[in-house]
Length: 231
Image 1 (cartoon, one colour):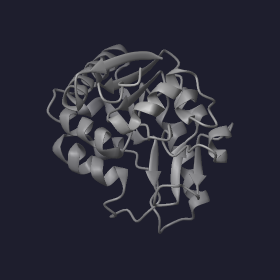
Image 2 (cartoon, rainbow, N blue to C red):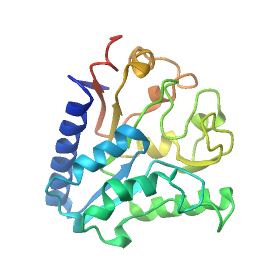
Image 3 (cartoon, rainbow, N blue to C red):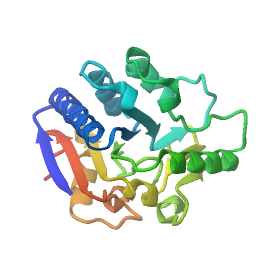
């Protein structure tokens, strides 16, 4: 896992957005498209807001999410809703290129996971999956001590007992995360420092799900100084 440490949160957001824009440009040049799996959380949302200010050929970009809260489509808790406010409503990305995971109301959680897995198959190769990380070293909605971290074969799973509200969620499995060409863990804050140290020390995946992520071509952890303070 390649490590990058920035002086502060603002620098982390600014530089990661710049690198992501460059990666999109390179992917579009190489194969005519770019596919990104986004993350939620405060840092993830700040990253999207910064990306909105940069030159990107949005007509060639497809987006989905590495996890989603299974709530009503209009809920402010939805990662997709937060991403629309930070990025999607500010850039000319075609609506059909935005592949939201299903919301609650129209289908059961299990049916939503099956539909989301089909959506992911249609998307094809993902250039980079962006992930945040919690103080417990969870990624997406794969939490320590829960069975989802051990799921094999499925791409997107139903999560019913999240220790963070809301309890019902949809999440990439580690298999889906690790099918991406690149995985970038973007982590800020002193409250994450212990988890960062445990992950980089090789903690067991059952106790620190972030230890199990590995992109096909690249795996990075991008930190601010506070998150890196225990290294």
